[in-house]
Amino acid sequence: MSIKATAKPADTLLSPRDHALILIDHQSQMAFNTKSIDLTGLRANVGILAETAKGFNVPTIISTISKDSFAGPLFDEITETFPNAEVTDRTTSNAWEDKNFIARVNAVGKDRLVMCGLWTSVCCNGPVLSALEQGYEVYVVTDACGDTTEEAHERAVARMVQAGARPITALTYLLELQRDWARLETYEITTGIARKYGGAFGIGINYAKTMFGHE
Image (tube, rainbow, N blue to C red; front, side):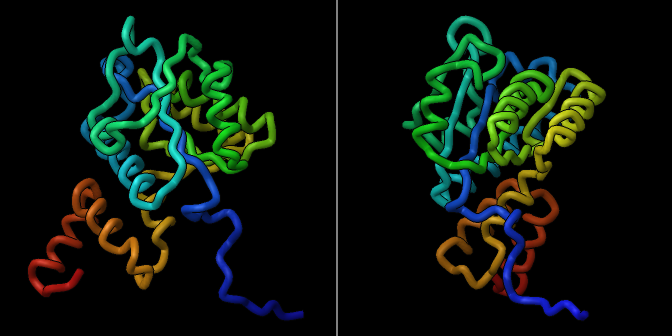
């Protein structure tokens, strides 16, 4: 029996309307001892996520831990993109154990969550495992997380994946939401974010625009 292909995307591919983005503890103190990823790259990846969520109108939950007494302010890439956002501050290292955070998750009403946080093994791992156990479908943006060592980061990612989380990267997130360059309503948003944060890919877009007049 032969299989016939149809022009239908995989159900596991993300779209702007089927999930919420959760950014956890991208704060100064947590970044000081993050060694598994270059901080410039980490901030760029967080910027991709924040601006993508805003541009595609994805519900976004932002949470901090002990902001005023210990861990300090959020990355500018988040606050400049969402200057008036509600930020849920907690004392629990696992955001999923904070009732105010859970109230926001419930209010969004999405069964599919895209999550990341500093550190991978604590601020990200705890809520991801908790959400999975409660039946949520979870995607982890692994290059918008970091940890004190590469070993700590990799073991945390492996643990989440073994529990059922799907690993993606920040640029993958952006391009997966756009997916079709004929979607003109978000074309400029996508190429603009890529040119700002997308490394070699963004430079290539800028080159094509400048040299050949292509967007």
